[in-house]
Amino acid sequence: MIAVDINILVRYAVKDDRLQTVAATEFLKNNTTLILKTVLLELAWVLSSVSGYNLPRNVVVERLRHICGLPTITVEDATVVAQAINWYEQGMDFADALHLAQCATSAGFATMDKRLIAAAATCGVTSAILEVA
Image (cartoon, rainbow, N blue to C red; front, top):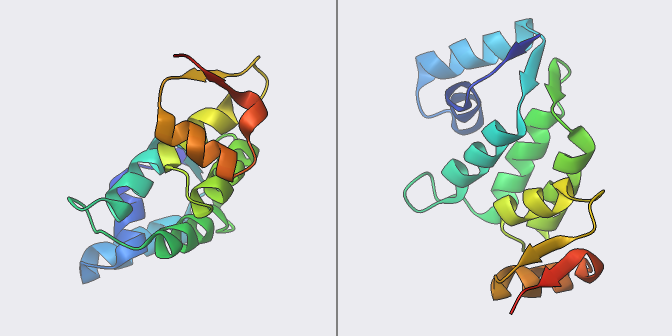
C-alpha cells in the first residue's frame, strides 16, 4: 500500500490540469493507496479555503466522500474520518470535526473556541466538549 500526498488528490478532485489529472486518476486506479488523516485535513482546507479553490462546503463533502470511497483507497481511521465528514457537512470546521472525532475514546475535548462549542452543539456533540473559560 502506498500513502498518497495531497497533490495527487487535488488533481483528481478538481481536474484543473489535464495531464496531471490523468496521471493522478491512473495512479489512484492502479494502486492500492492509503490516505492519511493529515492529508485529508489539508485537502479539505485547500478545496474550501479562499486562498485555495474556494469550493462550497457541499462540493467539498462530495469530493471527500468520493475519494474516500474509491475501491483502491484505504483511509487511516476511516470511522473517525467518516464522522468528521458528517460533522463538517453539518457546519463544523473540518479540522475541529476531525479533532473531536479523534478523541472519542478520551474523557473529552477541552477548548476555549466558542465557535467550535456552538458548532458541536448544533451537531449534537455537547457531551464530548469541555469548555475552558
